[in-house]
Length: 440
Image 1 (cartoon, helix red, strand yellow):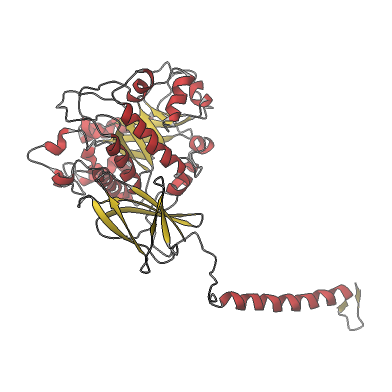
Image 2 (image 1 turned 30 degrees about the vertical axis):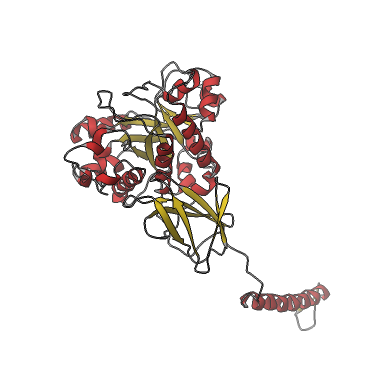
C-alpha cells in the first residue's frame, strides 16, 4: 500500500474488494427479496420446530438441574433423562440393580444403611437421601439429592412439621445436592390454611411430590364424600380414574406457584396397592390403570414419577414389589410390574420430547392433552378428561401443523387429518392414552 499525492491511500487489492462488495450486496439483496416472496404453487417453506402458541409455564426442564452441581455432573440436565424413582427397593448386588434398570428405574429413595455406594455408580443409578455409610463421600457422583422427609403435613401439626423440615434443612450441608420432600393430599386440600400449605411447598425444597393413591385407597368410597375439599375438585364418579392423578398434580402446582417460582413436581403412583395396612382392602391397581396414572401425571406436567413399592394390604402383600417380582416364581404382581416396565420404556424413549416446554392449546371437548414439538414434529399426548367418560374424541390441530396424517405411536396405525385440520380417535376406557406424532 502507498499514499497518493492527494494524501489518500491507494491499493489495487482494495479496488477488487470494493468490486466484490458491490456484487455481494446485489446478490444479498436478490436473495432477501426472494425469501420474502410467498411460496410458489407446489413449493413449501421449511418447517420450524416451534408453534405460534403460548407456552405452559415451567421450571426450566432439564436445565433446572444445572444449578445443582451433583445432578448436573450426573447428567440430569440431559434432554434424554427423566427421573423414574422407586420408593424403598433396596439393592444388594449388581444383578438387582440391573433388574431395576430393566424396569426403567434410575433413582432410589429409601434403602438399608449397609448399601455400598459403588452399586449406584457401577450401574448408573442415583440415590436421593442422606449419607448411608462411609462409602458415601463428597465425590460420590451418583448421590444427587437429599430427602428431607415424608408426609410431614399428615404426621404433624403445621408448627411441628415446619420445625421438622427446617431442622432437616439446617442439618443438610450445601454441597451441590438438591433437597426433596413428599407430602400427602392434605397439602392440596382446603383443610389446611393456604398460607401453611404454600409455605410447606415453597419454603424448604428444590423438588416436591405428592402421594394420593386414587385407585386403591378408601377415600373414594367415603360417606360423606369429600372430593370438593381439593383446590381442583374430584367428583365421586371420576374419583377412581387416572385423571385424578393429574388433578392432584395441578393442585400442587397452584401451591407451588404461590411464590412465582416453580420447581419440578413429581407424582407418586402405586405399583400394586397404596391403601393403609389396617385396611380396608379395596383392590390392586390394574396394569392398565397403572399406565394411565403415570401418563396422566406426565400429561399434567409431572417432571418425575415415584413408584410406591409396598403393598400393605390384600392378597398380594410385600415390602418391595419390584424385588419380589424378580425373585418370586409366579409372583402375584407380575402383570403390574410388566405394565410399569412398558410405560417406563415409553417415557424413556420420549424423554427428549417430554423434556421440552409444552404449548397451551385446547384440542377439543372432553380431552386432557399435552402438546410438544421436537425435530420437525408435533407430539400430542392425550387422554379423556376427568369430567367425562371414555369414547370418541375429535382433535383440532393448531395452525402451523401441516401434516395430513397422524401417526399413533406404539400402536402401528395412522389417522387421517381432514381439510379442517381435525382428526378423531377412540378412547376405550378412562385410563386409555394415545400419543400422536404429526409433521409440522
